[in-house]
Length: 331
Image 1 (cartoon, rainbow, N blue to C red):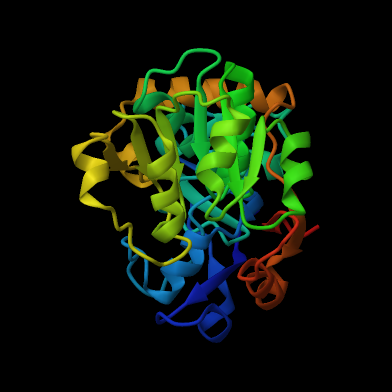
Image 2: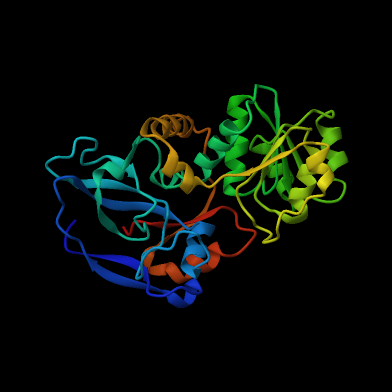
C-alpha cells in the first residue's frame, strides 16, 4: 500500500456527527525504524466520542484522527526493524488515531498479536479486557472462590470481568439496569446477576450467602456506586473506572469511618504510561491466551466501512446495543 489513504478527521471539537469528515492523506515513506500497517478493525469506544467532543483528558493536536484502539497487518518494515515482520497482526498504539486505512508507525509502539485471534477481537483487547485484567489483579489479592461485585456488568469491560474472573476461579455479582440482561450475562458466566435498585443489598447478601466481598468495580457513579459501597465488606476496595451516570460518587461519612473502605481509580492510559515493557508483555500474553482459547470475546453488533462513519458513530452513541460498533478495513 502506498500513496493516498482515507482517514476520519476532525478540525475542531464538537458533536461527532457535525465535526467528522473523511479525508485523503498521503502516506510518508517508511523509515528504518518504522512499519507500514494496514487497518483491520478499530472499535468506537465512549472515550473516542468524548475526545472528539473535547471532554476527554487526552486532547490531541488538531486536526486529529480519532480512535484509541485498533489492529492491523504489517505490510512493510524499515531496514532496522527487528521486533515485527511483514504479515504480522499488530495492536496499534493509543496515540495513533486508528480510524484510518493505514499508517506509518514507529515499530517499537506495535504489539504483535497472534494471527489466530480474529482481527476484530485483537482490535479490542487493549482497553476493556486489559482494564478488567488489571482491576482484578492490582488492588485486592483474590483467591479462587472469592467474590467481586460490579455495576455496568453488561458493558464491554464488565463482560470482560465476567470472562476473566470465571477463568481465574473468582465469582462475580453483576449489577445491571435491564431485566433482559440477566439470563444473557448468566449464560456468559456471571455467577449472580441482579437488577440495580434499593433492594440490591439484601439481594446480593442472599445470593452470595452473605459472603464478604472485598472488591467492587464501579463504572457508573452516583447512587449505584453508593449501593456497592453498602454491600462490600469492611476494609474492601472500590475501584472506579467510569462515570456512566455522570453523577459524582457521594458517600456518608460512616462508610469511611466504620467500614474503612478504600476508594481508588483506574485509567488504562495511566497504566500504560507507568507499566514496564515486561508488565505490558506479560499482561498481553495472558489476554492473548484467553482470546486464542475463545474464553475472552467482545460482543460485536456491526462493523462499518470508514465511509459510513456518520451511521457508525450515531449507532455507537445509542444505548441498548447488542455489542460493539467497529470500523473495518474496506474490502
